[in-house]
Image 1 (cartoon, rainbow, N blue to C red):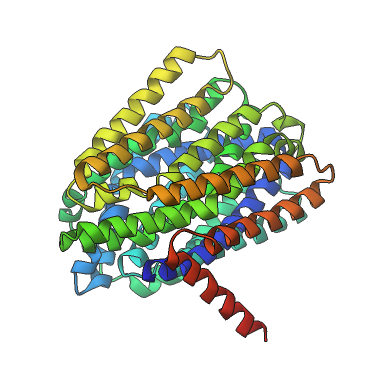
Image 2 (cartoon, rainbow, N blue to C red):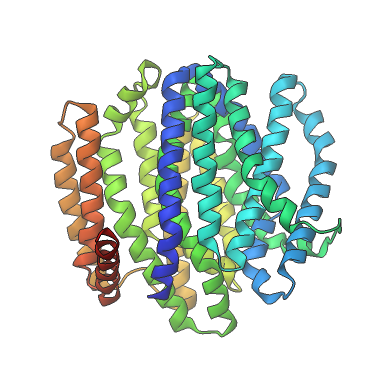
Length: 467
């Protein structure tokens, strides 16, 4: 029950932040148009790739090991200065590699975004490491997304509609949330490379898992135009809404998994895994079902430049649902002694993605999306088998799995009916209410007693506040 309470607090902020982020991205995609939105995301793809290589796995080191240290602020400060020093060394290398590929303005923006993304990852990891994930979600998800929207509106009022103004919104939002935190928590400059060596496994996992996904927007440009990049980008954004909700529970459970493993309490490890996976599925299933069945309507709303991208959107949504459905399997492997398995899994994911691209080549505009989706599904199935092999744990009990399948069929039938609603805003309102209702029903009639108790307590709390 404690893991549910802790997860739900951070989930609320994560959900609100995800909704604001969704509004920011969708509104940007609509008002900027596919070409400008695609161009901005093409450059942001470079920034994300640089972040993968220059974060050195330290964003995973903090959640796993920070609770073992007494002076946590000094540890964060040392990690920050170490990462900053390494990034400063990397800048000339990055500049040399990209100077002939990208214009000067874009390159400078890319380097700034990449560095701020690294700091934001460390900022989030620090709060997770000290057991205050809800603060991280409030600042990193909700507050960051709110500032994004405010700056975007200001940008549009001033008629600033170039790609670099969009990227500037992201930069200023990062600065707004990070500056107060850094001023409070940074100590004198101290470099400690031992953190990097201790994070080496995490770093390798980060690269093999993240490099293809991050670089996918850049690759997509070689398969078409900036418009095709825009379609992939908005598809990733919408699917990330699902991934973000699942990521919330994975982050909350990180330190819990690490503590359970320290005690070699496999039973507790399995209970935390089942609880987080089950909750995740209850919340994500109706969102994914609704979005997949209505992919064409969503893209029509964005404008002509996005039409024809239904396959890309559906593939990305499906892959992230499978990622959520199988739960934080990779988190367990990473937080225990089996992080090497995650390196293997990441290599499988990377190689399978490359093979699929090589086979499909440039025949289809959805090649990159297909390779991303299918490699995600493959690796999540593989990780589920690994947990069974090493810990003898499953994401669901048989009874609970049957219950979820029944709920899923009901949601499928309902959303097949509502997709025929012609008015977009009425459609959005109706489906929003339906999603919340299905989430409530999933908890209310769950096969697990703790789910029923939790939703009843939550309901009682809201009623008390209302009166």
